[in-house]
Amino acid sequence: MTRTITLRVNGKDHTLDVPVQRLLIDCLRYDLGLTGTKEGCSIGVCGACTVLMDGQMVSSCLMLAILTDGKELRTVEGLAQPNGTLSPVQQAFIDHGGFQCGICTPGMVTAATALLEANPRPTDGDIKEWMMGNLCRCTGYYKIITSIQAAAACLRGEEVA
Amino acid sequence: MNPFAYHTPETQADVLALLRQYGDAAKLMAGGTALTIMMKQRLVLPETLISLHRVQGLAGVQERDGALYLGALTTHRAAETSAVVQARLPVLAQTYREVATIRVRNAATVGGGLAHADPNQDPPVTLLALDAHVQLASSNGQREVPLHAFFTDYYETVLRPEELLTAVRIPLPGPHTGSAHVKFLPRTADDYATVGVAATVQLDPATGVCQHCRIALGSLGATPLRATQAEAVVQGQRLSPELLREAGAVAQQHTDPLSDTRGSAEYKRAMAGVFVRRALEQAWQQALAG
Image 1: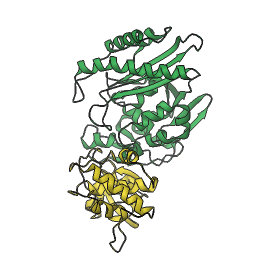
Image 2: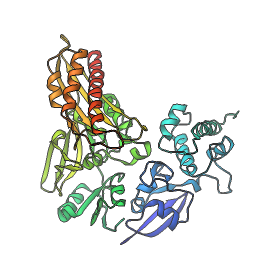
Image 3: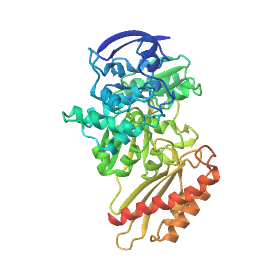
Image 4: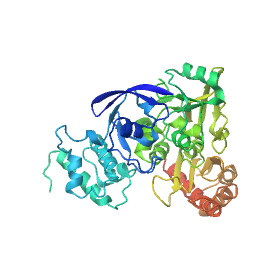
């Protein structure tokens, strides 16, 4: 049993026939070739598969692809500019060591992007609350917080120390 | 995951017609955060899946006739950030805010959580202490069920196959009333609690005597529980350390938790006593202040 769905991913429209039971993570990775989004725990806990649906963070491992019909999605591939220039969040993760082994990073930078769109001036407490659903097993949380604060400052047009 | 027939009704009437047609063979999906996992694990194998994501008119918070109404498709995140919920029932906004993570709360719905009926969830505990009622609709009509009569067993409720949970009604508390929800989270903030307790206390302002009390327990039995025996201990009494200890001791006697990775049954029972004490004291102090 398949369904035809139309969705916009990173600004590009796609019309696909997907099996009804297909998960969004598999649709992104295997149907659309967007392998930046990772699958970690498969039960919505680890945050590696975080994508933005109509601007809101969701777990793509817990979302049936058919439920995204008509929706606008952003994945890690959609964060950089088309010419490859990294977004301030991505660049800050590199500059401040928030990017370590890389498995959690797509979900981290996607979640952090949503945070800074909702709250351009977060406290460290705001960051911890927002990001607590994204797990890093390199124990890099403090560097991630530093990276997000640096990205926030950059997006506000402030000089970064 | 197994395939299924899939429907995306756009009105409540269409949902009810589909439920009438498919009955037990159909499962309703709202946010899908719980059901998708159960389908992935093949614990639930619906022949027909009815997604509610296009249904209009079932989301949002309204205040009318001395009560708050939370539409069944209101997300946890919307409940938590609702100015009305924050102002009128801060304990409920706080409870939703402490469920899982923002990512889960963006999808999980108020009605979906209740219909899922997992006794480890937090919102049913606070809603029980607030005397919430759930509104159920079918093509034969509507009925309202007090939440304490809604849950029947692990993942089981009185919802009939043809029924849809449409809203939760929560009476607004009167003056000199306090409510609290506390939970024990030994692992991570997004985990299910080892135990969770909510309490509501209404005091006579002249005497400080408790006129009404509701205590509810999570993760301590097959359903979220009302600790009616402990409530009886508290009613008609003034706050004292001895009273809180007695209420905790009585509450824990009437629990039936499972041993799991969050604690042994014996430990959970002991923690029930501690957390009943803490919830009651917080609610009481709030009632005294109000």
